[in-house]
Image (cartoon, rainbow, N blue to C red; front, side, top):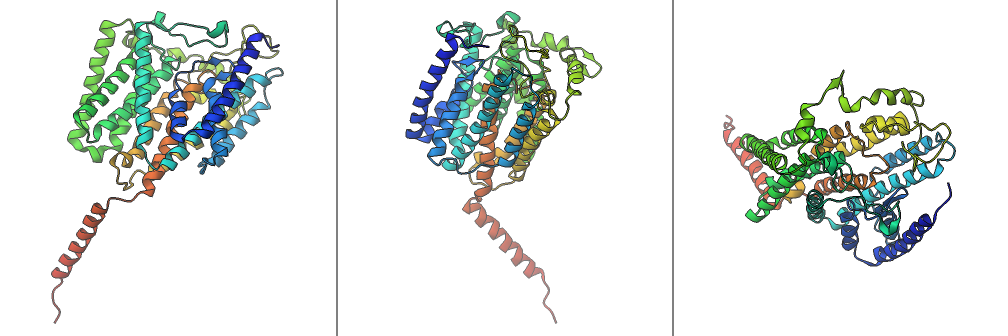
Length: 467
């Protein structure tokens, strides 16, 4: 397939922008570079079949940080190498004429792990969790603003410079469903669910009345726009994630706060649902929930699982190739290629593309994250915000694992959401390691020591005198 003028325009723009970004990332402070890179993740002004602008920016920033010596630690590197090996093994199974399709997809996957290491090293170098925590809150506000604009003024398909590949994301307003900045209702719902857990954690901390109002407003916005997506699985995933959250923080909350959090979250959800259903056109969630049917154990929207499984068993070990759908497949003829609908299940998606080897590699990666979060759950960090981060990370992983059973973030057109998720898990791994490296406050140590001494004195007094 030959290149058109638009393809050369994209290449020239990318190269020029890449040089500018590399020079800027090398010269500017790490904080300015990271904030610019991470805040741009959901809002890709260029999202072509060849990748997103953030993918290019990630490579440039990664190269600049490498030359500046800012990559000091690479945790889980062996597991990441195994994941990339699984993709290379799967690459050997691709059809002739599809090298570019699969090669570009592997480049996008590699950029996810670059983001993971960028964020991890940035947090460890700063030695503080509050900067990235603030960034996540600001990003949440920007996403809610985007969703609000989509609901009020609409965001349609707009082309930059008349180039089809440089097309802004489209909404699903005609279906009464909110797409959000990620361009997929399920991924937007998953994002809003994860951010809702962050809001719940923030509300557990001591803060000013204004800060508390901010986090309650953020939570209400997340739940309201989640309802507007009309995504059934998003609500179910959040319910499971919230249950995991309450279990993990049950000792810190106590019975009364445990009940208060559950009731408060339910009330906010109910009010948000009432507003969305009564006053917007994005009110199909409860109709979709009511109309849900099952064929055996499979929901009505996932009946394609059976057809996909028939293809999976043909190459179950290393899969059919890194990506599932090809670029411009409607106008191309690739001998032996048969388009398949997405399975709406990350586990089946991975088995089909990179086989059981790739699926196990990713399970190993996320399981190791969970193990390291779990090891850090009882840390004695002085900062109360940092102290609970490992348990919050575990609740997020539970929500993610459940959510991906009804959608796959690994689609080639969801690079932006993949980068958000890897940014998040990289940050929480750094939070966990920071928490384990910190000691409890001096005052707490003194109290603990005094209590031990007091118990020892009491025990000595109780020993009867001999004779």
